[in-house]
Image (cartoon, rainbow over all chains, first blue to last red; front, side, top):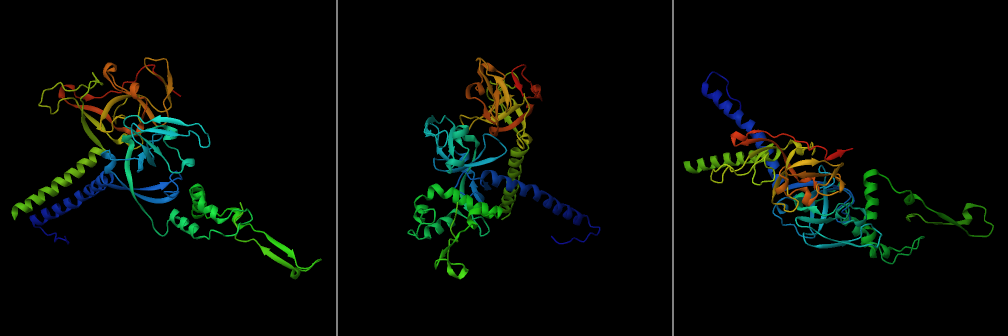
Length: 252
Length: 170
């Protein structure tokens, strides 16, 4: 626009007013554009909590959520959705859809109990469960969730260099460890970590997340033993001992 | 050439207006029309005969209550039906989270779970409400009714009618 010469002429004032009006209208227009995009097209969410490990990280994942599917009922079992929590409408939850209306869901009401409850999902509801069965508050606790509470389907996950350790990175490192490493002092060999990845992954990820967030390493990581084996009988000086160090072993 | 310019100008204006209109209707206030008997006589459907347009009461909703989901007993709220996400219903809030209430027509006393509420229509005879589908999550609520704005002879502020002796909130 440039600066107008503010001298006397009637038309230049009108032009100034017109320009000012354009700038004033731009603000609510921009805000409305943001709102409409966020509510009807795409929005972003930050994750928090372990209930979707190992699919999503504990902390620091940025999810790109698309809003059209839940508006038109195109959500299917297996989708990860963002929903309004039935226990607190001010917070949002991120879970996987396990069943739609009419499906029969069987589950253990408490982790570790052998009792099985079977539930039919009523009309207009869905059954949500977190991937991390042991640490997830979901439909097993508050029942089927009305479809209208679903706010969007998770479409993508954004990841940058500064983000916390990703499940994929840890998985790759564990996979690269030699399978037949000698057992440590606790007799667990590395192949155990490979075979039971699904079981220990949430705990391993929690260990790394805790380190990333709180700069805390478990005490056991730093503990070590150094065994001194006698080279000759009756050894009295340090040079007569052979040290066997058990550093870099994880003691629990 | 001039027509294209004019059409483009018009499109921009319409798009801007639509964007701002949608935002205002989602965040501040919107208008709904009543077409069910469940809130009679407070809110009546279709008594004027104007070609299907403006048939029922037109009610002004405010959306500021959705910031913190704090409601009062007796508020009339609009919410998405728990049995069909495409439908919206309008009923009165009878009980809020943590209230103990007696379920009508039974001898049961229930506590409204956290994050849920109990809604009932004023016209108990023809109302599909919490007596059928139980307490509903507060997240389903889309707005609170403030006043009736059409037809003019029924235009008035919607009163909060608190039902006597039904609930106890501790």
